[in-house]
Every structure is written in C-alpha cells, then in structure tokens.
Image (cartoon, rainbow, N blue to C red; front, side, top):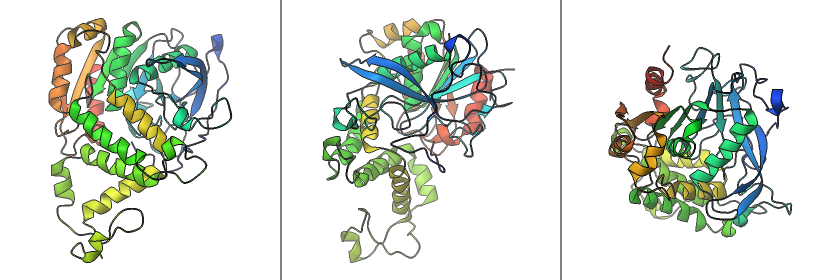
Length: 401
C-alpha cells in the first residue's frame, strides 16, 4: 500500500485532466495498455449525505487497459485508508500496492479489462479534500465538510459516467476499500456485476471506532494542528505520526510482531536507561526496542506523503461506515444486491477486521456466500502482503479463464 518512491505531492499532485475520447468520454478508449499515471476529472458539485454540497469536485484516478464499446469490461479497485490510486506500475517507474495483480496477462488482465482506481473523497492524492483550494483561493482546511463512504461512492459513480463505464465487471477492495466496494454494490447494484469485499465488514464496530478515535485525537491535539488551518505554517507531523503508530499496531498481528522483534533492542541503543523518561526530538525516546524503531519508521514514512487533515477526514468517514444506514436491517440492506456475485474474504490473523465479521456479512448476503480465508500470520495487512493469495481467490471467482 505504501508508495515508496516518486510520491505524488500531497498538496499539489501531478494530474492530467485527459482529452475526450469517442462520445466525450475521457480516457475510455485512448489510455493504451500501460496506464499507471494519475489523471483527474471535474464532476461538478456533489450533494453530501450530511447535508450541503461540495462545489466543483475533482476525482483523481489511474487506469490501465481499454474500455470496450459497451462500457462493461471495467474493473474498479478501491484503496485502503492511506492508500493511493497506484495499484500497478503500468508506464510509471514505481511498483503499485497490488503489483502483479493488474497488468497484461495478470489475474486482472489489462488485455481484457479496463481497470480504474479512484482516490477517496477527502484524500490528498488529487481528489478534492481539505488541502484542495476552495473558491476563495485558500485551502479548505477546517472548512472541509464531513464526508462519508457513501459520498465517495457517489463521486466515483460520476467518474464512471465520465469514463463511459456502464457497469463494472467487478468492484474490488480491501479494508476501507472493501467498505467502498460493498457500498457500491448496495447503492448501485445495477452497475455492479461482481463485488469483492476483503478484510472488511458491513459497519464499523465499537472497537474499530475506538481505535480510530485515538488516531484522530492524536492529530487534533498536536499543537501545530491549528484546528485544521495549518497550511501556512508547520504541519502537525507529531500527531500524524502518532496516529500512524496506533493504526499500524492494529494492522499487524501479535504473532508477527513477536516473531519479528520480540524484546530485541535496537542496535546501539539501551532501553534500560534514564533517557527513556526524556523524549527525544520527534516525540520518540532514546534507547528503543526494535519494535519501537519499527513504529517510528512507519510514522516517518507516512508524514512525508500524507496530509493530516485528510487522515482525519477519511478516518471519520470510515468510522461512519454502516451499509444499513437508512436501509433497515442488514438483511434488508443487502437484499438490494441480489444478482450481484460476491467474494467475501478474511485474513486469518486479522485483529482489526475479525474473520467473524466477514462471516456475518456473508451470512446476510442473498443466496449462499461462503467466506474465503487468506492464511497469513501478518494480521490485517495480509490483504496487501499476500498478493498471490488474493489473486488466486479472484482468479477462481471473477477472472476464471
């Protein structure tokens, strides 16, 4: 999921609005087989579930392959919380976060399918978010409105219209991407033929909300957060780094951390010393255990590529995730998806989105849907690291020869 090189700028990503293709659809038949380049489309004003609207919304996306004349060979891949649109290398110089899954001859074969990945509403990789410039010429900052998973799906539907996609052959997502994929199937069942929900659930639970609240408060309580209006000054990197540390603990299993680090000490440091009580620059401590150094590293990586306001906005959106909202019981809400083929998959060691939650979702779907398991000791991040296992599940179900 991490973009390790040549990151798009957090505040001003390099986007290309594209040129209209046949029928006015940008990049529907003119992308070529490479792709992997960030593009954007203005979808106009967007009404929001919480009320009001966002004016002049831009949706950033990447795409690979060519859309067929019927507009029905398209596949939508949804990224996780701090992920990006860069699923596959394509013509770029960096690997994607699901590298090997998408491309010519791959499981999602771009010789056959037109693959799209869109940046989440509220993000900082090109889709309108808190760091975007408002009508008055200043970043939205604290003025950015509350957005939901459902709002982002409506924005993505506008993108699909602009690209000429009539129906998705499949919508696929893991973690927050799985929430977006599920919301697509329930909101627009007539436009989704197949839906893969990986390491995700029907609604954020109390525990998931609790973990998320701790992350959001870490950012909001940073002295540099300035209520969200920090773009003319120092960014709240300490708060964002702490949020990442909290999140990453939930992304990995105790087994994986124990086997990888145990109680080992970071080389050249001593955790049995008085310096442990005197925080060093950056909020960490001197004399660290290896696992502490690892979390520090994860924090540093994120703060160089992600906007704190976007982290708050998207985390709040995920906290609000509930596919039943305004739709009755879970069974009643999911009844709308009859006719959509589902793949529900769980990571065996996931302690953020438990396999039992995937089972609950599968049991409530129309027909008989069984949960498939990704065997991994990694934890929640297994949906990212076990690309081969995810690919096999998709090949067996949605992309069989």
